[in-house]
Image 1 (cartoon, rainbow, N blue to C red):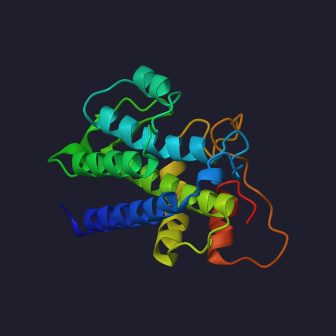
Image 2: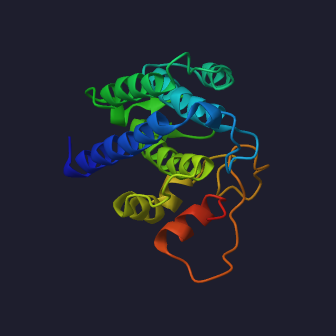
Image 3: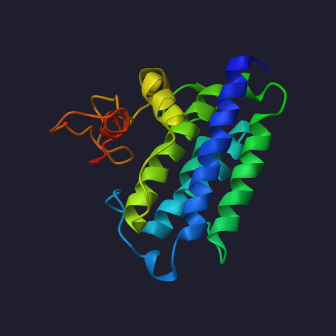
Length: 200
């Protein structure tokens, strides 16, 4: 594994830890709170990231895009959402670390992708949804600046050729919100979030 791949694994571990810490802090009354994702409450948001880890692990092991689209409609949290996320994230990370997985072509439903591209997409997704969850439950919203910088620096590479992605001019914005327009001077975090359709 290269030094660049070691960096990717470090980023995924860190953003998983940040998201897991927030999930553990969700109060009983907050699971139905609205999030910056218009169709999701907190429970649906956390379920989405559990699903993402389950789905990516499945794709890396030869699963199909049809299975991807089926699984993402399921509630995967069970009675212990924090443990559901921890377990799914750990299993997915371990699969990414298997020999040859990063070079493996997968049946990603939104365009051509190998394991390394999936790893980057999962990092970006988890970073942005960490902010979504923080805003929804009123927690501090500052993200790790190293993760913000990495997502921003790799934005075009990650989302090139991703149908319905934030760079797709023909997107229906069903899966990614349209980029938002800054009204004031931007921080690095605000710029990254706006590229992902958020209103920081």
